[in-house]
Length: 372
Image (tube, rainbow, N blue to C red; front, side):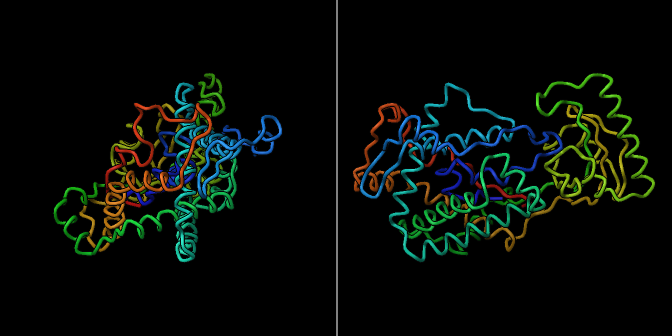
């Protein structure tokens, strides 16, 4: 699908881009040992003070605000089994500060209508994220892993959606149905949807999720024996989705009965080969990948097809809008900063002269289509 969030993907690197990818694919089980971030603001304030690091007309960013956002970003990375290299931390601080400044500048331009529409859009996107994750329980678990709450996420997303509305209005971007139709007709290859399958799996991991180290041979043998028992139960007629919820060790899919929909090229080769070779409602033998033992049930084969314009038009308009905004955004942002007299007070947080100007990245993800 098109990248839908001009602010969330390029201004807010914090939470907005994270929710849609929380569910782990079978080839990369979600991390389960990420430590939830504590609220740092009070601790930082008491230990080091809460100095102003950037200011301007309508803009004030304090150290505790910045540190809280950076810690949240680190927690999100940890929840996906990733980390920020130490040599990049200074750049992350600078970028997050610039994002906070951007949001405050755009919020200063927001009308009551912008804010109302932003809140509604944030709530809609939050519900979409919950649907993609499969359940309220999965969502709450992921929020906890990332050291945040529903209220904090909605506040972040409301700010970003409000800022998005401001940009559309201020920069007078309006993509018509005719514009979208022309793009659709000029770029037929972008709307070719490859063959896909809808399949469910049960995973028993052969690595320790806390350390990512291999289990011992005895532990692997025990997992294999357990999986053989589950396979017998499936073939005896027990409900596959219920067994996945009860036993699967893939937290990204277990609450959805182990289900994923995917084309070729996204999963581990062994997993993909097994899934695409099955007939509808057929269950595989035990499949081994580097993550552990799987049994897979195929629910549906979806042939390659072209996405209809009616289904693509919303994404096309979003994508074209983002391209137009991206083109105008750096100049507009520089104008807002100059008008507000924005100053960065901490020398370590000032971008280097040779660094690319902060704001929307030049390599903003291109538009693409696919299943949602």
